[in-house]
Length: 116
Length: 114
Image (spheres, rainbow over the protein chains, first blue to last red):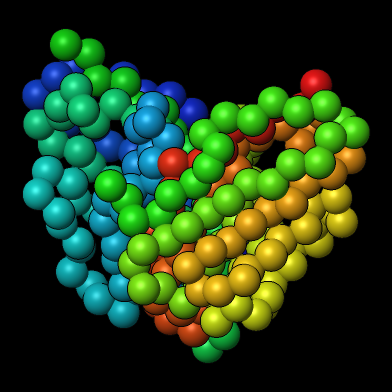
């Protein structure tokens, strides 16, 4: 089983500033996918960004970007120009790219609060 | 609109009750999932159905009984639950199990066991 660790249970950021969420994972796989999901108070889990391990270029999605360090098994999420609507719990997730085993493993989550 | 709809949104039940959670997806997906989300713990995968066939049962107690009558609907039948079963139960779907496509989640059912 893969282990995904999010070491920051809670983070707070001022509106318009930048916050970085950390995520590390443990795997012996070489080919896999990494995701960040956002769960606002409405509870709907929304995919924020996805990274394929074979791609060296870091994924970006508008104000969200990742710093993927494959050797270090690190996958941090940077939220730039934070907005009040970014207040949510953020989950890092790992999925192997292995036939018949596309199981998601989640971290425990980081609660992000954006202050006005 | 997420494309994955879960009902009810909240459920309070006693340990001897029998109830069911429902999930419906309108995305044309073939794989559906049940997850359990407890406070301060990673999401736990419970069951996976692919083309209506159960492909994964992650050592879930028999007091949880899934049913997938078709690719668009997934149920979780509950009976004789324990207080530690109180959690948010999330349903998700994806294109199919044999795929690296991301999963789409519903809003969850908040279950409280008295």
